[in-house]
Length: 166
Image (cartoon, rainbow, N blue to C red; front, side):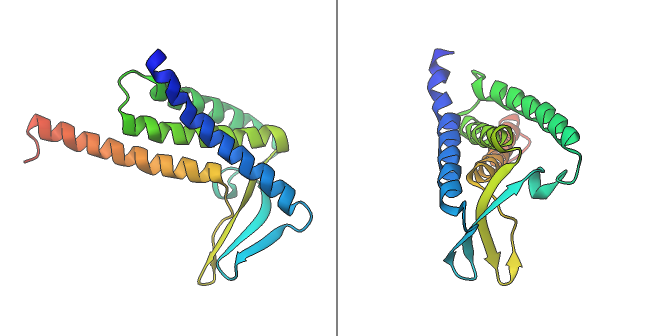
């Protein structure tokens, strides 16, 4: 267990970076709401998402949202945390899980502090406006992609070792 403790720095760092970015953006955009960085492509736009991904459950009653987010958040942190700290978890999966945990904790902290997730990264591509998001969301998505790749590569390695692939 002692050898795995330094790994806790990864989700802690992701949480700290997310927290700092949101504190900075709240100070920067508290009065004006938007700051154009690259016209027609990227802006910093302060928004609050009371729902989940892409605003899912945003219109649900607050008690329902709170119950769903508490149960799903605790289940996710427990499962991913257990996988993260297991002795046999490969390094690439541990990195992916650390990013997912840090992002989940960042958005969970927002829900406790603000009652919604603070979003501010705002992109537009050739007239298509993407959903506003934050660094915690980015950590979760990057961790999810990395975890998927790690699991696929692990399955391929296992099949090769078993002689299923040549």
